[in-house]
Length: 235
Image 1 (tube, rainbow, N blue to C red):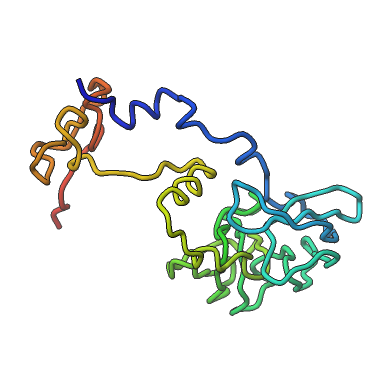
Image 2: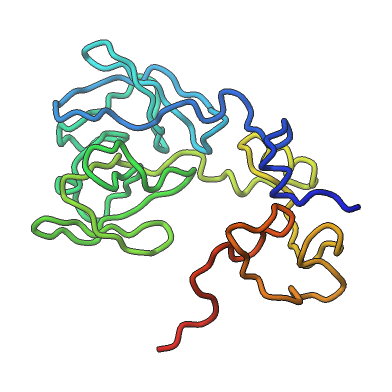
């Protein structure tokens, strides 16, 4: 009898497929407040769940916060929340940010604390302001339309040269992925043996339809699960 499918092993929840403790327990969203407040950067540190550097900020009211650090910021610098003062790492409304300035950690809806552009070395740019909206170009070159009341941080996220590091060994890549709870290496079902995957075998294609019932047993529940339709859409 062959091995269990990869998705079956992951669903079981063993230690191999469980995230490391304290991996994603750090919140880097900025304050959900309309008040204007300033703070000083007191420390910069790495965190397992984030590719960029994280900074700790102490505000004027002595409350603490952790934010994604931009390239070039240092301990002792001052950042501003909702003050409209353009400084590195500060949080401003999109309507107050001039076009062409790099931004990151952008809100998708006002007050959510930042959802877009949060990985190392990334930055987005405002390309147009409207009456009630702002068009933003993401690092993928796609353009999204957001409310003028959405906020963002100014700058480019730190650790931009992360992907330039030479990995050399496959084992090192495994531990890099394992630290962030990513499964590596991955393989295709059609490259497996017939006993290990429903699409396995010497043929280099599925050999059967990939639509699967919602009530299929775990050993067959791969492919397009409960799909309404597959294939190209007729125009």
